[in-house]
Length: 290
Image (cartoon, rainbow, N blue to C red; front, side):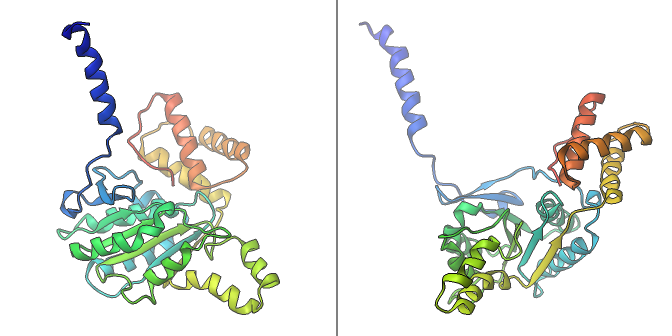
């Protein structure tokens, strides 16, 4: 076989080896962006140039939670005492969207901008590593975990307890931890009830399980919305994106859309708006569901 024949084969082998090789370690330089995702496998931060989210004013029916989280975050950004926050409750009611919207709102008029770092639920075990890195950076940072919960047999919640409060090192002063969950105590009810029936000291066992949520100084509850709030969400999105549609038709379609899905929420409203925009031939900017 001639060198000419071997060239494409060698090129393919080289490409395959390059794909198999682990990526270079990511950098910890927080000046690259205002948002990052923690890459636990490669122990580094991946910059996010454009955060997918909605404007704070578009989030309907959660005014009290929004006001409290905004005030807490502004205090933190100003170097004042602030609490870790747990946003818990109904699915699709804007918990994660609120965190991203608050981050954007606080940064809008600041030169010393807050950093937002997302850590995935399955990477909670690497919290001590990322907190040490964020602490060394000195930049004020919100560490955010979406859909945080723990199942039976999962002991990683103990390390989270130590990190939030109670550990020797604890949480760096320049880092605040925000989490969202569908569960108020971050664990399924049957897991807590099981402790009451099988533990030698059921009170102590249950206390250990639910004490994790007590490490969050700020609890914000999100509850299913009524029809009026749902329609306000739909109308707000329609106005924001310039969708010209008769209000009676909008109302009828939005209610039918919610009925077929068996629920009313910000996420359902957003999915309807995406469907409507597609049918109307209107392109939407990149946004996340509420």
